[in-house]
Each structure stands twice: as C-alpha cells, then as structure tokens.
Image 1 (tube, helix red, strand yellow):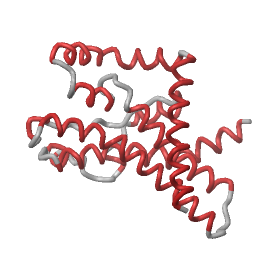
Image 2 (cartoon, helix red, strand yellow):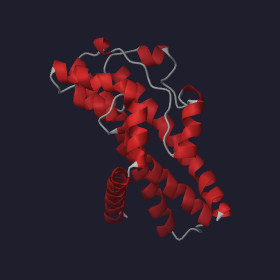
Image 3 (tube, helix red, strand yellow):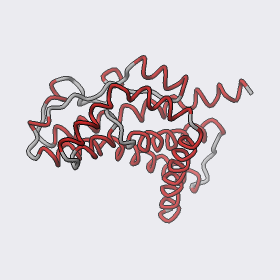
Length: 208
C-alpha cells in the first residue's frame, strides 16, 4: 500500500508543477495582453517554476491536497477595459489548465494509437498531468476570494455585494478547509472534475 501511494506521489509531481506554473503564467500573460505591465516588471511573465512556486503552498498541496502558488500581482487600472480585463485574466488560469489537460489526454491517445510501448509509470504521469490540471481549473473557479471564480463574479456584482464578497477573503482558508472536510462538498467537487475530465477525453476520442 505504501509503495503504491509513493508511486502516485512521485508520478504526480510533474502534473502539480505544470499546473501551478502554467496557471500563474497565463494570468500574467493575459494581464500584459490587456495592458498591465505589472507581471512583466515583477518577473512573472516566465515559465520558470522559481517565479511561481510558493514552497509552503506546494508542501500543503502534497500533504492535504490543498495548496497555492504565488499570486500574480496586477493593476486593473492599467487595463484598456477594466471589467473585461479582470474577467479574462481570472479565466486565463483555469482555461490554461484545461488546455494542458486536453493536450495530455490527446498526447497519450496518439501515443497509444501509434502502438508505442506504454509503461505503468508513463501512463500514471500523463494521466495525473491531465487530472491535476482539471482539478486546478475546477477548484480555482470556486467563487471565494482570492480564487479565480470570485474575480469573475466580482466583475458582475453590484458594489455592495462585491464588497461583502471581498470581506470573506480573510476567512477563505478556514472556509475551504471546512468545506473539504464536509463529505458532500468533496463529492460534488470530485464529480465536477470527473465530468470535465470525461468530456475532454470524449472530445479526444472523436479526434483520434
């Protein structure tokens, strides 16, 4: 049992690093594209993991399956269109994770279709890259600040409601821990992740 868990732990490392780096890089890239140079000035417009990985967030992700990367700092006032910019920047992270998941599934499907040898370890790494990126996308769309879902929601909420939502940020960590401990929430989150993963896999099957 321990050996199996250790194998999954090691196989999941590439997926976690890719998910975190691509997610934060995409936020930075979208912000710069919308007119805010802050991420570039702060050295976040890079795929170098050192620029994006938070050691504590990475450790807790491995230990309790809940972690974080260094957030990309932006200045929405620099956007050519503030509301549009905030929504696109927020969506860029989860969207990029879904693209990575799709490409991982597509790569494995093409690889297998060509009849190339597939080891258990190789299969696990590719599968976990896809699954972890799907999980990142879905989790980050939870509408709690500072998660991306809240950024999208804030762009459309009236001022008073937006203010009240932002006030929750100081309690987000506690709220998420409590939600994760609640069975129905984790089951629903898992079901959504599996539905997204299955949809991506179905699209790949239509293409390959």
